[in-house]
Image (cartoon, rainbow over all chains, first blue to last red; front, side):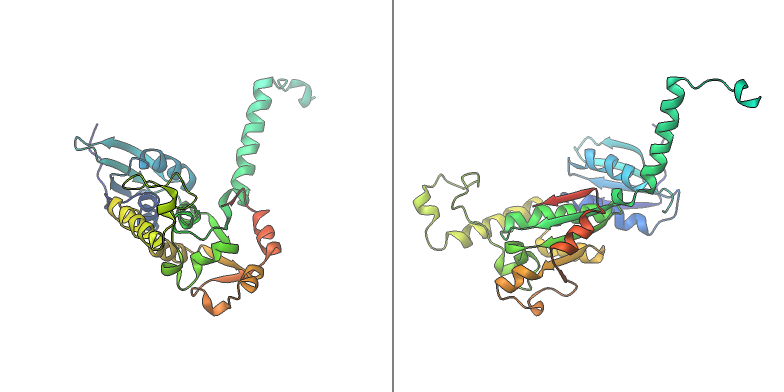
Length: 82
Length: 186
């Protein structure tokens, strides 16, 4: 995959539900449409939560992957504000 | 005649139109973006589900309200840190470090031991504290509403509750709930 250039990074490693989504929501509110937030997480629930959250909020989960150490990386593109 | 020249609607065509109209209507339906929850339990473990769901709903852009009734009032009481406890009595699902007969779990002091154990376990695992979740809820404009009737029953006054707490009754909850697709009694 080609590298995605993020505008901001959120380190949510070590946090459990619902904090990764809560913190991502807070970060995204301060961003403009089209900007990309890279989220680092260790909560396995985030694999299901971030796609669902993106659908509900109009943001786009561009890509996610699991790193060799088992941590998770998500790239979320800010959608249109409603 | 223009009308006779139009291609007749096929079943697929009708389905496409219905789908499009439904999508349009669903976007306009504010109830899909509202959650009204009831929190009715006053133990440390049961304080979590309503607060987790409410903060997650707010993070997803939903207008969210939680009504606290009966023992649930403990969760938004100024002394919630002291009032929210957990007991192994009557809860065979609660994990204990060593197997314990019911007669021991009911002994004096066991409640604070169990409460301390749960708090430290949750902190170690990275679960937010109740205080953090309440702070997030208030910050993200979740409405926290205390049930006035049960407050009166338990002799609570409005001053007993956290700043930002509102007060209301069954009609206020129902008025909110009927505008919310997500309603849960916890």
